[in-house]
Image (cartoon, rainbow, N blue to C red; front, side, top):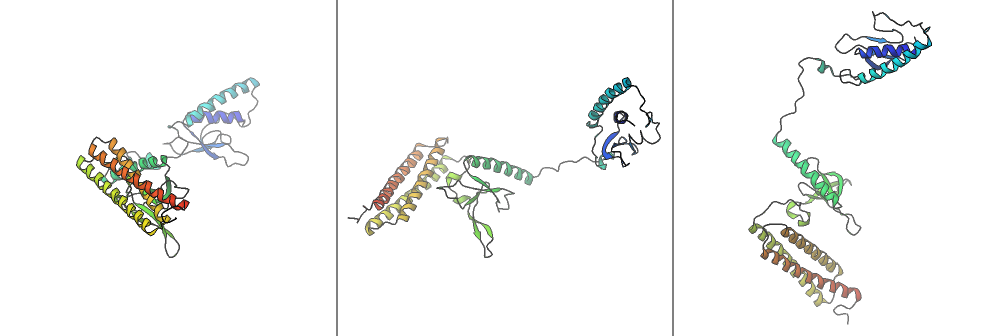
Length: 323
């Protein structure tokens, strides 16, 4: 049987709903794909080249034919190409899929898959996932790095930890959760295996790390928080002044202490600046609160200037007691 005859048989039966499978004929020298009967009918297989059609049907094309004229051959070739293309398009339709479907779909009245009812826990996890995704994206844009480790808090489901941007070319050893705000460090046990150790919770976080969508507080609560921060700043200023006086009395200033004090003052100044920015966008801000923050920033700036003078004096060797 010629190739054009085989293609014609394949196209005819595909138009009738038969499926062209990916299994080939097992007869030696024949690699023609087998045809399978339509779904819902008794399963029958046949080879278009060897069998010519399903068992019990009359083969209209003889395997020994080939004495047709050249005109008939050309017409048959054009017909075969159109039939095969139509057959391929029908094969891709959902009504005659080329892949197997589970037997449950063949059973009439089989139950459809229904999503389980939404619970409070599923809503909480969805909200947590949305909040974590938003905060992860916000911090990635600010230079934070997302790590392969997850938060160990049982209420945080699969939340990855993040690390702050490198400061001064050094990598921060702290890792933070964007949902519960727990900060971890890495420690080694006796076997040398690394593990996460929580060292900070939300109550100890720096205000610079707070998410932007903070809840709205009353004016009294806002003033109380700002007053507490101003008191902490004043205590820092007083501690710096004590350190400075001690250095003047002893004629020796520890460079490490000065560097640490300068860093703390710079962080305090940054925190106060963040508070001022928050108050600028808050509708509950008051002139008194802004005045207190401005006064605290002025005190910190003066203290920072004094510290830098001491550090410079130590550097050039012209500090107190150098003469």
